[in-house]
Amino acid sequence: MNDPLLKDRESALDLIKRTALDTWRQQAGLVSAASPKTAVADMNGSDVAIVGRAISRCSADPRIQASADRSPFVSDDFLALANTGVQTGIDWQWLQLNAAVAFTKLTLVGDFREQGLITPAPPPLLLNPEATPIERGTPFITQETGQVQTFAIQVPISDRLYANDKSGIFIQVGQKLAVSAAAALADVCFAAITNNLALVDGDPWLSVIHGNRAAAGAALDVISLGAALAGLRVQTINGLKLSLPPRYLLCDPAIELTARQLTRQYFDPEALTVISDARLTGYGFALIADPAVFPCLARLQIMENPLMVSARRQDGGIAFKAV
Image 1 (cartoon, rainbow, N blue to C red):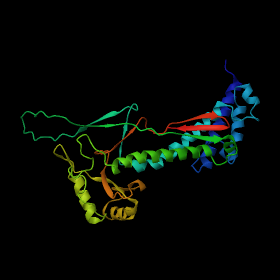
Image 2: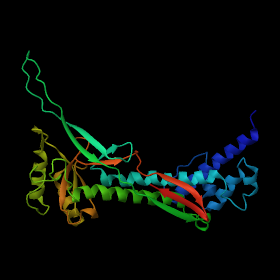
Image 3: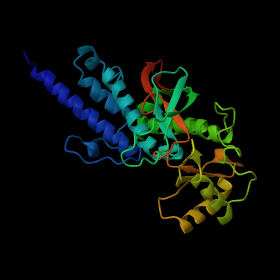
Image 4: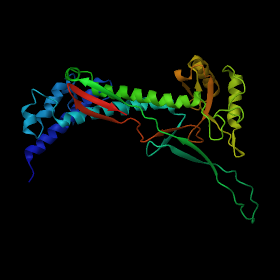
Protein backbone atom coordinates (compact mmCIF):
# COMPACT_ATOMS: atom_id res chain seq x y z
CA MET A 1 0.00 0.00 0.00
CA ASN A 2 1.29 3.44 -0.90
CA ASP A 3 1.41 6.04 1.88
CA PRO A 4 0.43 9.48 0.44
CA LEU A 5 1.84 11.22 3.52
CA LEU A 6 5.21 9.53 3.03
CA LYS A 7 5.23 10.59 -0.63
CA ASP A 8 4.48 14.17 0.39
CA ARG A 9 7.37 14.08 2.85
CA GLU A 10 9.73 12.72 0.19
CA SER A 11 8.67 15.44 -2.25
CA ALA A 12 9.14 18.14 0.39
CA LEU A 13 12.51 16.69 1.39
CA ASP A 14 13.67 16.65 -2.23
CA LEU A 15 12.58 20.27 -2.66
CA ILE A 16 14.46 21.35 0.48
CA LYS A 17 17.61 19.55 -0.61
CA ARG A 18 17.57 21.07 -4.08
CA THR A 19 16.83 24.50 -2.66
CA ALA A 20 19.54 24.26 0.01
CA LEU A 21 22.18 23.08 -2.44
CA ASP A 22 21.37 25.84 -4.95
CA THR A 23 21.34 28.39 -2.12
CA TRP A 24 24.78 27.26 -0.94
CA ARG A 25 26.04 27.42 -4.53
CA GLN A 26 24.78 30.96 -4.84
CA GLN A 27 26.24 32.03 -1.49
CA ALA A 28 29.60 30.47 -2.42
CA GLY A 29 29.73 32.53 -5.63
CA LEU A 30 28.88 29.74 -8.07
CA VAL A 31 26.27 29.97 -10.78
CA SER A 32 22.91 28.70 -9.56
CA ALA A 33 20.45 28.24 -12.40
CA ALA A 34 16.87 29.25 -11.74
CA SER A 35 14.59 26.23 -11.56
CA PRO A 36 10.89 25.77 -10.82
CA LYS A 37 11.90 22.83 -8.62
CA THR A 38 13.73 25.05 -6.12
CA ALA A 39 12.95 28.14 -4.12
CA VAL A 40 16.40 29.72 -3.98
CA ALA A 41 15.07 33.26 -3.74
CA ASP A 42 13.08 32.30 -0.63
CA MET A 43 16.06 30.56 1.03
CA ASN A 44 18.86 32.90 -0.02
CA GLY A 45 20.58 34.25 3.08
CA SER A 46 19.09 31.58 5.34
CA ASP A 47 21.44 29.96 7.81
CA VAL A 48 22.20 26.26 7.86
CA ALA A 49 20.11 25.70 11.00
CA ILE A 50 16.94 26.61 9.08
CA VAL A 51 17.82 24.07 6.39
CA GLY A 52 18.58 21.41 9.01
CA ARG A 53 15.30 21.96 10.84
CA ALA A 54 13.32 21.83 7.59
CA ILE A 55 14.95 18.53 6.66
CA SER A 56 14.31 17.09 10.12
CA ARG A 57 10.63 18.04 10.00
CA CYS A 58 10.27 16.10 6.73
CA SER A 59 11.89 12.99 8.18
CA ALA A 60 9.83 9.81 8.30
CA ASP A 61 11.16 9.21 11.83
CA PRO A 62 8.77 10.75 14.42
CA ARG A 63 11.62 11.16 16.92
CA ILE A 64 13.60 13.30 14.46
CA GLN A 65 10.48 15.34 13.69
CA ALA A 66 9.92 15.97 17.39
CA SER A 67 13.51 17.13 17.97
CA ALA A 68 13.76 19.30 14.84
CA ASP A 69 13.60 22.64 16.69
CA ARG A 70 16.18 21.64 19.30
CA SER A 71 18.63 19.56 17.26
CA PRO A 72 18.37 20.20 13.54
CA PHE A 73 21.29 17.98 12.51
CA VAL A 74 20.13 14.58 13.68
CA SER A 75 18.76 13.53 10.32
CA ASP A 76 21.08 11.53 8.07
CA ASP A 77 19.62 13.49 5.17
CA PHE A 78 21.37 16.61 6.38
CA LEU A 79 24.74 14.86 6.56
CA ALA A 80 24.26 13.49 3.04
CA LEU A 81 23.33 16.94 1.79
CA ALA A 82 26.43 18.46 3.41
CA ASN A 83 28.56 15.80 1.71
CA THR A 84 26.91 16.54 -1.63
CA GLY A 85 27.57 20.24 -1.11
CA VAL A 86 31.27 19.61 -0.53
CA GLN A 87 31.47 17.41 -3.63
CA THR A 88 29.80 20.16 -5.67
CA GLY A 89 32.54 22.55 -4.62
CA ILE A 90 35.22 20.00 -5.47
CA ASP A 91 33.81 19.23 -8.92
CA TRP A 92 33.52 22.89 -9.90
CA GLN A 93 36.92 23.95 -8.57
CA TRP A 94 38.76 20.94 -9.96
CA LEU A 95 37.83 21.95 -13.50
CA GLN A 96 39.59 25.26 -12.94
CA LEU A 97 42.75 23.71 -11.45
CA ASN A 98 43.45 20.67 -13.60
CA ALA A 99 45.23 22.69 -16.32
CA ALA A 100 48.36 22.97 -14.15
CA VAL A 101 49.23 19.32 -14.86
CA ALA A 102 47.85 19.15 -18.41
CA PHE A 103 51.32 18.25 -19.70
CA THR A 104 51.01 14.81 -18.06
CA LYS A 105 49.06 11.74 -19.14
CA LEU A 106 46.46 10.38 -16.74
CA THR A 107 46.94 6.67 -16.07
CA LEU A 108 44.33 4.86 -13.99
CA VAL A 109 45.59 2.09 -11.71
CA GLY A 110 43.74 -0.40 -9.58
CA ASP A 111 45.43 -0.21 -6.23
CA PHE A 112 48.30 1.30 -4.26
CA ARG A 113 50.91 -1.34 -5.06
CA GLU A 114 53.86 -0.71 -7.35
CA GLN A 115 52.67 -0.60 -10.94
CA GLY A 116 54.51 -1.79 -14.04
CA LEU A 117 53.86 0.80 -16.74
CA ILE A 118 54.28 -0.89 -20.12
CA THR A 119 54.12 1.38 -23.15
CA PRO A 120 54.28 0.13 -26.75
CA ALA A 121 56.71 2.29 -28.71
CA PRO A 122 55.85 2.92 -32.38
CA PRO A 123 57.87 0.59 -34.66
CA PRO A 124 59.28 2.04 -37.91
CA LEU A 125 57.55 0.68 -41.01
CA LEU A 126 59.74 -0.77 -43.74
CA LEU A 127 59.47 -0.20 -47.48
CA ASN A 128 57.60 -3.16 -48.92
CA PRO A 129 57.76 -3.54 -52.73
CA GLU A 130 54.73 -5.00 -54.46
CA ALA A 131 54.27 -8.77 -54.26
CA THR A 132 57.07 -9.22 -51.72
CA PRO A 133 56.52 -10.77 -48.29
CA ILE A 134 56.13 -8.43 -45.34
CA GLU A 135 59.13 -8.70 -43.07
CA ARG A 136 58.66 -9.79 -39.48
CA GLY A 137 59.22 -7.08 -36.90
CA THR A 138 59.64 -6.98 -33.16
CA PRO A 139 57.30 -4.91 -30.97
CA PHE A 140 59.18 -2.28 -29.05
CA ILE A 141 58.22 -2.09 -25.39
CA THR A 142 59.32 0.46 -22.83
CA GLN A 143 58.68 -0.29 -19.18
CA GLU A 144 58.93 1.80 -16.03
CA THR A 145 57.49 1.42 -12.55
CA GLY A 146 55.35 3.81 -10.56
CA GLN A 147 53.42 3.94 -7.32
CA VAL A 148 50.43 5.93 -6.10
CA GLN A 149 51.32 8.37 -3.35
CA THR A 150 48.57 9.02 -0.81
CA PHE A 151 47.79 12.31 0.92
CA ALA A 152 44.97 12.90 3.40
CA ILE A 153 43.59 15.36 5.96
CA GLN A 154 40.60 15.60 8.29
CA VAL A 155 38.83 18.95 8.67
CA PRO A 156 36.44 19.45 11.63
CA ILE A 157 33.74 22.14 11.48
CA SER A 158 32.07 23.16 14.74
CA ASP A 159 28.29 23.26 15.05
CA ARG A 160 28.44 26.98 15.91
CA LEU A 161 30.27 27.68 12.66
CA TYR A 162 27.91 25.89 10.31
CA ALA A 163 24.71 26.57 12.24
CA ASN A 164 25.14 30.32 11.64
CA ASP A 165 26.59 30.01 8.16
CA LYS A 166 25.23 32.19 5.38
CA SER A 167 28.20 31.86 3.02
CA GLY A 168 27.72 28.38 1.58
CA ILE A 169 30.47 26.91 3.74
CA PHE A 170 29.96 23.35 2.51
CA ILE A 171 30.53 24.39 -1.09
CA GLN A 172 33.56 26.42 -0.06
CA VAL A 173 35.01 23.52 1.94
CA GLY A 174 34.87 21.49 -1.26
CA GLN A 175 36.57 24.28 -3.21
CA LYS A 176 39.41 24.51 -0.69
CA LEU A 177 39.88 20.74 -0.56
CA ALA A 178 40.12 20.75 -4.36
CA VAL A 179 42.82 23.43 -4.13
CA SER A 180 44.73 21.28 -1.63
CA ALA A 181 44.42 18.18 -3.82
CA ALA A 182 45.59 20.08 -6.89
CA ALA A 183 48.58 21.45 -4.96
CA ALA A 184 49.58 17.96 -3.78
CA LEU A 185 49.23 16.57 -7.30
CA ALA A 186 51.28 19.43 -8.76
CA ASP A 187 53.99 18.87 -6.12
CA VAL A 188 54.44 15.29 -7.32
CA CYS A 189 54.29 16.09 -11.05
CA PHE A 190 56.70 19.02 -10.98
CA ALA A 191 59.07 17.17 -8.63
CA ALA A 192 59.40 14.47 -11.30
CA ILE A 193 60.73 17.16 -13.64
CA THR A 194 62.93 19.16 -11.29
CA ASN A 195 64.40 16.02 -9.67
CA ASN A 196 65.04 14.51 -13.12
CA LEU A 197 64.33 10.94 -12.08
CA ALA A 198 66.50 8.08 -13.29
CA LEU A 199 64.95 5.62 -15.76
CA VAL A 200 65.47 1.87 -16.05
CA ASP A 201 68.47 2.32 -18.32
CA GLY A 202 70.29 4.15 -15.54
CA ASP A 203 70.24 7.52 -17.29
CA PRO A 204 68.11 10.42 -16.05
CA TRP A 205 64.91 11.23 -17.88
CA LEU A 206 66.30 14.51 -19.24
CA SER A 207 69.82 13.80 -20.40
CA VAL A 208 72.38 15.35 -22.71
CA ILE A 209 73.15 11.79 -23.84
CA HIS A 210 69.56 11.28 -24.98
CA GLY A 211 69.49 14.68 -26.62
CA ASN A 212 66.50 15.98 -24.69
CA ARG A 213 68.42 18.40 -22.51
CA ALA A 214 70.73 21.27 -23.46
CA ALA A 215 74.40 20.75 -22.66
CA ALA A 216 74.56 24.27 -21.23
CA GLY A 217 71.78 26.41 -19.80
CA ALA A 218 70.65 29.53 -21.67
CA ALA A 219 68.27 32.38 -20.96
CA LEU A 220 64.87 32.13 -22.62
CA ASP A 221 64.93 34.09 -25.87
CA VAL A 222 64.30 33.49 -29.56
CA ILE A 223 67.59 31.61 -29.98
CA SER A 224 67.22 29.29 -26.99
CA LEU A 225 63.54 28.66 -27.75
CA GLY A 226 64.44 27.83 -31.35
CA ALA A 227 67.08 25.38 -30.13
CA ALA A 228 64.53 23.73 -27.83
CA LEU A 229 62.01 23.47 -30.68
CA ALA A 230 64.63 21.83 -32.89
CA GLY A 231 65.61 19.46 -30.09
CA LEU A 232 62.01 18.36 -29.61
CA ARG A 233 61.51 17.81 -33.35
CA VAL A 234 64.57 15.54 -33.71
CA GLN A 235 63.64 13.21 -30.86
CA THR A 236 63.75 9.54 -31.89
CA ILE A 237 62.77 6.21 -30.40
CA ASN A 238 64.16 2.98 -31.77
CA GLY A 239 65.44 4.93 -34.75
CA LEU A 240 62.00 6.31 -35.60
CA LYS A 241 61.97 10.07 -36.15
CA LEU A 242 59.06 11.47 -34.11
CA SER A 243 59.13 15.14 -35.18
CA LEU A 244 57.21 16.08 -32.04
CA PRO A 245 55.39 19.44 -32.07
CA PRO A 246 55.51 21.51 -28.87
CA ARG A 247 52.33 21.82 -26.83
CA TYR A 248 53.36 23.11 -23.39
CA LEU A 249 56.10 25.53 -22.38
CA LEU A 250 56.94 25.02 -18.71
CA CYS A 251 58.88 27.87 -17.14
CA ASP A 252 60.23 29.55 -14.04
CA PRO A 253 57.86 32.35 -12.88
CA ALA A 254 60.74 34.82 -13.31
CA ILE A 255 60.59 34.33 -17.08
CA GLU A 256 56.84 33.90 -17.47
CA LEU A 257 56.34 37.28 -19.14
CA THR A 258 59.08 36.53 -21.66
CA ALA A 259 57.57 33.09 -22.31
CA ARG A 260 54.12 34.57 -22.99
CA GLN A 261 55.53 37.29 -25.24
CA LEU A 262 57.48 34.77 -27.32
CA THR A 263 54.59 32.33 -27.67
CA ARG A 264 52.20 35.10 -28.65
CA GLN A 265 54.66 36.43 -31.22
CA TYR A 266 55.56 33.17 -32.91
CA PHE A 267 52.65 30.76 -32.31
CA ASP A 268 48.95 30.71 -33.06
CA PRO A 269 46.74 31.11 -30.00
CA GLU A 270 46.31 27.83 -28.09
CA ALA A 271 49.06 26.14 -30.15
CA LEU A 272 51.58 26.46 -27.32
CA THR A 273 50.36 26.85 -23.74
CA VAL A 274 52.58 28.45 -21.11
CA ILE A 275 52.55 26.79 -17.69
CA SER A 276 54.41 28.81 -15.08
CA ASP A 277 54.65 27.50 -11.54
CA ALA A 278 56.53 28.46 -8.39
CA ARG A 279 57.76 24.86 -8.15
CA LEU A 280 59.89 25.57 -11.24
CA THR A 281 61.73 28.48 -9.60
CA GLY A 282 65.34 28.38 -10.75
CA TYR A 283 64.61 25.60 -13.24
CA GLY A 284 64.54 27.57 -16.48
CA PHE A 285 62.18 26.23 -19.13
CA ALA A 286 61.18 23.03 -20.90
CA LEU A 287 59.14 22.19 -23.98
CA ILE A 288 56.69 19.32 -23.66
CA ALA A 289 54.89 17.54 -26.49
CA ASP A 290 51.15 16.90 -26.38
CA PRO A 291 50.69 13.86 -24.07
CA ALA A 292 47.87 12.69 -26.38
CA VAL A 293 50.44 12.38 -29.20
CA PHE A 294 53.45 11.16 -27.26
CA PRO A 295 53.36 11.20 -23.45
CA CYS A 296 56.52 11.79 -21.48
CA LEU A 297 55.15 11.91 -17.94
CA ALA A 298 52.33 9.91 -16.34
CA ARG A 299 50.31 10.72 -13.24
CA LEU A 300 48.80 7.75 -11.48
CA GLN A 301 45.32 7.87 -10.01
CA ILE A 302 42.93 5.25 -8.70
CA MET A 303 39.87 7.13 -10.01
CA GLU A 304 39.07 9.90 -12.48
CA ASN A 305 38.49 12.40 -9.70
CA PRO A 306 41.54 12.07 -7.42
CA LEU A 307 39.81 13.45 -4.32
CA MET A 308 37.61 11.21 -2.15
CA VAL A 309 35.66 12.95 0.63
CA SER A 310 33.47 11.50 3.37
CA ALA A 311 31.52 13.42 6.00
CA ARG A 312 30.67 12.14 9.46
CA ARG A 313 29.41 13.53 12.73
CA GLN A 314 31.78 14.18 15.55
CA ASP A 315 31.33 15.80 18.95
CA GLY A 316 30.31 19.40 18.44
CA GLY A 317 30.12 19.35 14.66
CA ILE A 318 30.93 17.62 11.38
CA ALA A 319 34.28 16.30 10.14
CA PHE A 320 35.25 15.95 6.47
CA LYS A 321 37.97 13.46 5.61
CA ALA A 322 39.72 14.05 2.29
CA VAL A 323 42.03 11.47 0.68
